[in-house]
Length: 490
Image 1 (cartoon, helix red, strand yellow):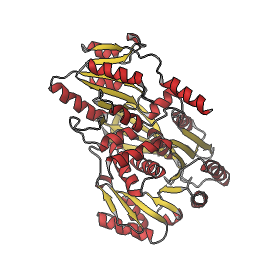
Image 2 (cartoon, rainbow, N blue to C red; image 1 turned 180 degrees about the horizontal axis):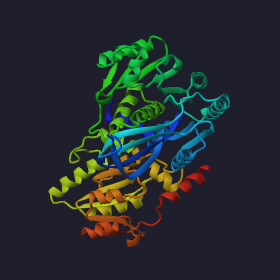
Image 3 (cartoon, one colour; image 1 turned 45 degrees about the horizontal axis):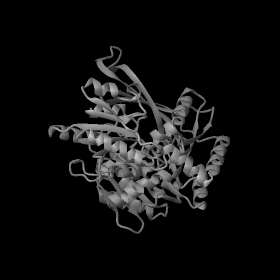
Image 4 (cartoon, rainbow, N blue to C red; image 1 turned 90 degrees about the horizontal axis):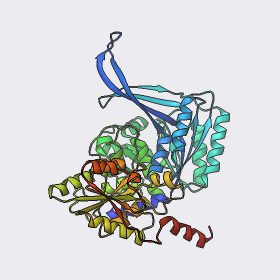
C-alpha cells in the first residue's frame, strides 16, 4: 500500500455517493469547570461555559462522508421537538448531505449530552427511545431507502439500537441493497449478528464482537478467531474489528487476518470514531479500494478524529498529510496538516528564514495562479499555501464546486516549484491558520484591498506586511468552468 495508491483512492472519494440509514442523534457537549462539590450530594458542580451541538450516530457517518468530499444521502427518524430542528439545521449547513429524515411524533429525537470539565467527561445523559418503529414509520423509511438506492455506490447501516434498524427493517434493506448490487456495510449494535446476514462487511468493535460470539477478544489472535466464527455462519464476507489503542483487524473468509497498528498520536475524545471508520471504509470501497486498503485509510482517519475534541470528522487532506513523513524539510510531497505545518514554520524560523502565506481554492490551476505563487515566493524565503477543503468550497461556491477534489488540488499546487508547503483548511477563511502560523508576508491578488484581506490585521500587528500581487489578465477559474460547461452543452 504505497503513498501513490492510497492518495489515488483519496482523490476518488470526491465522486462517491453513500446512502446512510440508521439511528440519527444529536450529540451535545456541555463544557465547563468544576471548582466545588455540591452540598446536596457528593457530586461535582459544573459551572457551564459553553454548549456545542453536532450531528451524531448515523448523522455523524453522513457528516464524515461530506467532510471527506463525497455526497451522503441520510435516512433516519427524528421526533417532533427542538432537538430535531437543531439537527436538521446542522445537516443543512453541509451542501453535500441530503437529509431525508422522517418525523415520528411518538418518540423523541435521540440526544446524548456529555458534560466535560477540564478536558474530562464526567457524566452523560441520554434522551432516547429503544422501541422499534411503528409500522407506518417503518414503511416510510423503507420507501425513502428504496427511492434513494439507485443514487448510491455504497450502503451504510448505522445501528445504535434506537429502534430504526429493527430485525424486519434490517432484513428488508439488506435484501434490497444486495439485489441492486450494492456494497452493504453494517456498524452493528445487536448481539445477534445473524440479523445482518447478507451484508458485505460488519465493523464491530472488540467488545461488540465478544458479546456477539461469546469468545474472548483481547489479543489480535483471539479477535481473528472470534471473527472467523462469525464468517463461518455466512453472515458476511468480512469483519473489520476496531480495537481501540491496538488498531484495526481485517478478517475475511479466505485470506489471512491483517492487523493494522493504531495511527493515533494523542487521544482527546473517542466520541464518533467508529462513525469515521465506517464512513472511510465506505468511501474507500466506492473508490475501488481493496478491503485492507480501505481499512488502512480508516485507521488513519480514526487516529485523526480521536485527537480532536467532540464528535469530530476527518478530511481527505488530513489523511493525505498523515500518510507523509512529519519532517517537512525532507518531505517532497509538501502537503501538511496544520500542526505539522506549525512545526515546519518553527524550523524555518530557527534558520532565520522569512515565511510568506497565500491562500485560495486553486480549483483549476491556470497561469494567473502560477504568477501569483511566483510573486508570493519572491517576497520571502519560503511559501505556504492555504487550500480550502472541498466542504469549505461547497459552502462558498455551491454543491457543484470544486471541480477537482482537495487531494487533486493539493497535489497539483504542491508540484509548483515556488510552493514549499500546502495546508488544507476546513473553515471558510484561513484566519485561524494565519493566526497559528504567523507569516511574515501575507499575499493576495491586486483585486483585493487591505480591508478585504482576511488576516491582514493580524500580520500587520505582528510587524509583517501585506503584498498585493499583480494580476495576469484573462485568467479566471470561474470563467474557465463556465466555458467548459458551455462547450459541453451542460
